[in-house]
Length: 561
Image (cartoon, rainbow, N blue to C red; front, side):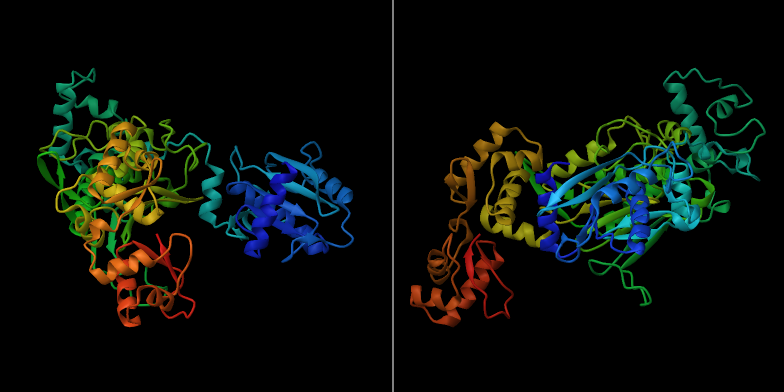
């Protein structure tokens, strides 16, 4: 680490007034801090890595009196020395670096811990695996659950839980019509499988074992009712009235609730239907044609749900957990049991490289029709699902999906507030009329939310051609919906907002650089304060100006967006 990097981190922490998920500060003045150091090493190794700075006091993050950097450095190197099993303090030892850097005039020890690249968990030897394994949660080190320990113990294994036989099952537990539809599809594709009178192909596809019992993959892909054997392997769709779940202990009130059972293809179709019922649609004009567009495109929902059923952990400790879909006012969250397998991280999820957790199930889902009548399949398994989600969300003016990854659970978050949102659509219509393209709508929304928009911003959001987007921005400026405030940079115009004379006067008085109070605007416009306040309120609502404080604050002032 460079000295400038450490200085930058410390400046951030001093602003926060505490540690964060990446940096831990310890004075190392007491024996308890020496003890907790190894817990933090474990936490960073089992999470996303991190940096431990030793020799500083909190909350000032200034040098701790009496800190002996060389002595502490020697003790840390000894505790991480894999050639001395008696001195080693954590196991397995993660990749690390130890450096001496200055804060003010005193040397501090900076320890950088990398995430584990082998099966874990990294644990404090004196405490054992169960009590000595930790993860980083915010600025704290939290002990791992038994499920999280299990997940890390097998993270880099070649998983085969989907090939396990399911006791008590046989070919009669398959959905006959779906199985026949799959057979017909394979025959049309001139498969080399053996379609003899004994249904040998079913064994060749690992749907059943040599003993005649179904594999877990076969049961989940083609079973008539897998929940007879695994009651919790379903998708739970819950619609919440607000932006968060009800606090623990309160009576939970759902707007809608659907438990989607049967095989995974049926579960996904039923889940999509339940989500569709609780999302909005809007009419979009592209060229001379119009079409109804779901608030979150169905392609995105299908890919997210397919990823969930295909890549969730089906090993024994996770079979009592379902996939959850939570629909909030501002987003949809799809959460599946199990962490990311192998070397997958949030940074490389969209690289197109697959590390399938359930390779047999994934292969089956390339051949199982989505329904008895429809020849399309649930999963292409070509590694492009997440890229498809990202590009599709961009194309309709929505933020790209985000992923929240814990050791034993992965959640994809899909934002709802795009051009299909009623308030946003009404705001855009007020400026562009009823007929506008997705790119035109996105341009105005970005100008409103970011204060300005460029062709580069739009390309990142919509994936469109930079040259065509630049022409479109120029056109919006010529129409008066945007103003080119500097070369290639466009801000909102007041012309398309259909302002009253009073509102226009107030807008003209508000500055781009100086914050003005309502009274100052009243003095500048020579209009009554009540009229000015009403106009300011409207201008804030439509995004032309920004308020600097809540309505109840005496310090509330205004400037142009």
